[in-house]
Length: 478
Image 1: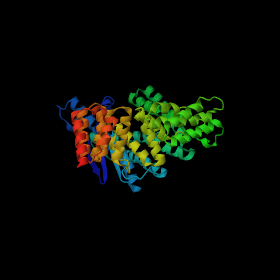
Image 2 (image 1 turned 90 degrees about the horizontal axis):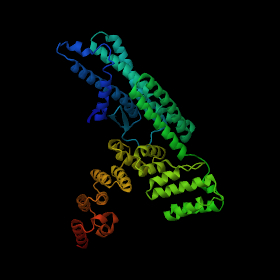
Image 3 (image 1 turned 30 degrees about the horizontal axis):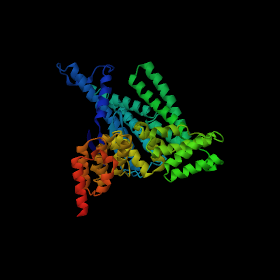
Image 4 (image 1 turned 180 degrees about the horizontal axis):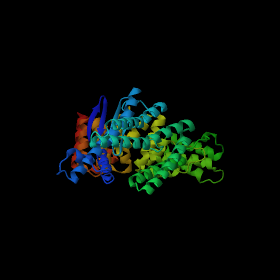
């Protein structure tokens, strides 16, 4: 990747962006009309077909690069109008712009303006290219090619981007407006229902015209819209609170909820199961509250699959919190689904714990730069969240790698010790000892705790580990 700045706005270009633009250019060669103007410009008889294709591809890469950059610059400049400090990253088919100092979720009116600014700048580039084509047409074949391509490419991209489908800008706008007018649950359902209809129409159009990439992309978008709708239907609703329930079973439910709040998970699970096993007096509403409680018990015990099973049975006026669904998906290893739920939870709560879990999910997805750009983020906390979930899943080597990455942002004895525990659980004694020594350098001194820590049990009897414990005890005694 390479980086540069447009004034005070940092820009990062990832290799995936250049690769995708090159592929788009290559697939459009056969459809190019009138040959390649570069042969006429250079006028060399030896200038071959292969060289012309290479220059055509490079030219298209330049056009895509400038067009996407202008689009993202629209978002960035609109962010600057509201006092934010944005950064731009170009990746895959497009890019994204993030305010680096945003204190929380964007106010909805600002979000609309910033979102709409991208397609607007694209339309302006298309219009300027059209004016240039009228003024300079026929001046040189290459100039005609660039102006015409900039005009049509940006017009097409601006119109496409305003389609009401996530993650396109139009989808962001319709979702924001729908949730504002109809409320979060109904608004998301309406916006995603519209998106699903648009995607079906786009897929039909793509199949009829033979546009394979267009068809695949909107099929993926449509599946995403359908999945989000089903997730909302399964996990969110509004209605009566559990405290309004009456009767012996309701009283047992209240006891289970109190046990959960007190951290007595075994009691909470036992009482909840007793309610479900008593058919007399068990209403659908009461059962939903119990499943909600048992889902939270499973989460606190680190079991994502049972949590999802219980949450899927919650209905009839009981709401499952977005961060609970996100945590369950994280625990089962489905970070692709978890990240959207974490994002939704953060945008609706502005909770810093949720923010760091969201960032940790981005880190596990390999999107470290996206995570580190989140406003108000503590990088060490984000990496710790990412590591903890991997550790719970049993992905110990991955957890250790994330822990070592956290050390680069926050040299901390606890972080180094946790990374050592992950290495130990992965049966990697040399790396575990390296991290334990690093923890000692950073101030770790509790040899008694380390000797009894079950996570370090695989190191018991290892000469280096025993020597390390002796050193700790001697240091504590001196």
